[in-house]
Structure formats: structure tokens, C-alpha cells
Length: 319
Image (cartoon, rainbow, N blue to C red; front, side, top):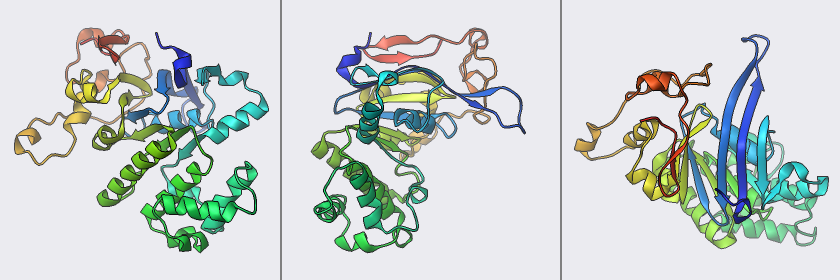
């Protein structure tokens, strides 16, 4: 049983439904189903899964850009739904997000200096007299020169824009940083730079990190523990070393086998699944049933419960 007070954030039975458009079938689309997660103080949680599994939606719920349909979110042991308006404003300041499409999150009509100063002034992080020096200091911390202060977002490369996103989040002095695929649109060399930067800043600032990605090689490099999501459900979670050395769910095994390697023997061991990720209308069956290469009759009848394989290693699979 997880002690809520021992973790900086806890998610309890989080469900998220979206109303379908008028041009689609009637009813609701379930994006997340009974998500239970916890993040310790100073810990890094990796969330992995293919596109459309609900990773970004989960991140937006954590930073309150989306509201869960059911379930509770606890921050420092207190249910977020009980917060006053002022307490909620503090929460929004202390839980920051680095967006996947960083260029879309930067106002093209404002220069970088203005983009970074405005949230700090609104939240009274710095005085008007000191604000420019603080922004210059933050730019230096993320590896950008002072001339960046006077530039437009369109004048920056993808890696530089991502650093601005990190800089903007850091300006709020966050306790939790949610990074939504921060390296997915970057070159490999730039990806490595951003990962090193995040690890360095986490050590310096002491924030907890939620790192969302579909790249398990990156997640292995940065995370203390990992949760694997498929169709809005967590199918496996464990400490990083345990998950990578002892994957139990068939979907996790497929993801791990897809990590690029130069070893010709391992290339032949790659597992493959047919079809694409799609909505499961019958929630009583295993969500991975249609694509699983190990499925048995019970998988098409009953959705498995979480069970413990080893200490803090949970898997949702009959097999």
C-alpha cells in the first residue's frame, strides 16, 4: 500500500473520458483507465508507450491542463480537489510542463526575453528591477548566450527552442517538472544534450521529474522507475533496472526488443506485433488481446488484475 504522504504526487484511479465529436460514433472515448501512480521526492518517473496510448493526456492532467473524469490527485499528501483558489495557483506554479511541440508553445509575436519575463512577473518570482538579470542567468544555465534574450522564437533551432521551454519551466522554481517527449523532434546529438541538461538541472534544483517518451533507450538513461502504458492502462511498472532486466508483459517485451542495436544476433530476436493501436470497446478483456503473440482464451474473457512479480514490480497480465 502506497503511503500518500511519502510521495510528492500520487494518482489514484484516474479516469479520463473525452466526448466524441458529432461526426463520430456516439458516446465517449476513454483515454485513461484506472491509472495509479506515485512520484517520490527528487525521483524521476519514466512513462512510455506508443503514440495514442494516453501519455500526453496523463501529463496534462498532472499539470491541470486537463481535468480527470474520475479519480484523485494528491500533491504533498493533500487531495487537489480540496485546494482553495490560492493553493491551486501555487500548485500550478510548482508543477511545470515542457511541451512536446515546443515551437507551438512559444508566442511568435514576442521575443524570448518577454516570453521568459512575463510568467515570472505575473507570479511575482522576481522584482521588475532584477528580472532581466534573472532571465540572463537562466539562459546561461540552459546553455544559451545573452543575445538569445533579444531574438524571436523563429530565429532559434529546435534544440534552442527546447532549451527555452526548459528555461521557462525553471523560472517558476518548480517542485515537479513534466517533460512531454522533449527530445522526439530533435536530432540524436541534440537529444543527448537535452537529456544531460535535464539530469544536471534536476541535480541542481532538486525537482522531481516525470519524463514522457516512446523511446525506451532514453527513458532507461534518465529514469529511476518506469510505467508502461497501453491504450490508457498501465500494464507494467517497476524500477528501471528491474524492468529492463526482467520485462514481464508481452507489450513491454516488444518495446524493449525494438530498441536499436548494432548486435546482429539481437536483431534477429526482435519481437513484432500486428496491427495498430486501436480503441477497445469491451473493457472487460485485456486491452492488448488483439495484438498479443502470447494470448490465451482467458485474455479474451477477463481483463487481468495487477499482480506483484518482485518487490515494486507490478504487471497486468494473465500469463
